[in-house]
Length: 219
Image (cartoon, rainbow, N blue to C red; front, side):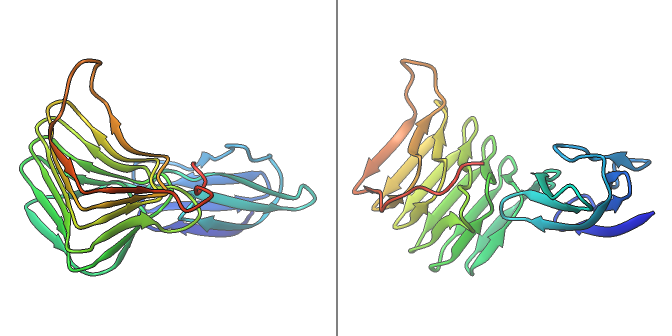
């Protein structure tokens, strides 16, 4: 029998069910229910809960305590065209700026990312974070940071990037302008994906690199 059911937001309509034989999962890509036994015992499951920020599903069992496991990763959202984020928002899925598209974050908007989530600037795409906008973690888990691809452009001007594992991952064919930006409580603020001896184009000027204490947890 099915003892409990749970829907995963921002997924491909993913549903978990707790049964007398463990947890099962199904979404739009699957034709039938599959056993979701990542770190879970095959036991009677009485309740299910999600921590969407941490990307964790928890299962309460009959006689075998509480268990937790990484949930199925949320579907990435693509940004096409010219998009502006000028209000606060919470992001619990990867964001990909598609080729030749732009994302501008401004007006002091505070964008909070779930643990392990990335903001990818695709090939020939542009990201601008400016006007006192802040990118940071939603909870006690680091977000993955800004990932850049070939020929992308990244502008961080009068902004704040916080709580990321790699705040900015640079590639050797990207262009970067980082001016008067605060990098705070990141595991690595500027990370180079480039081969040894290569160099990304752009400039870093007037930025502050700061640590306030204990870093958030990395998934």
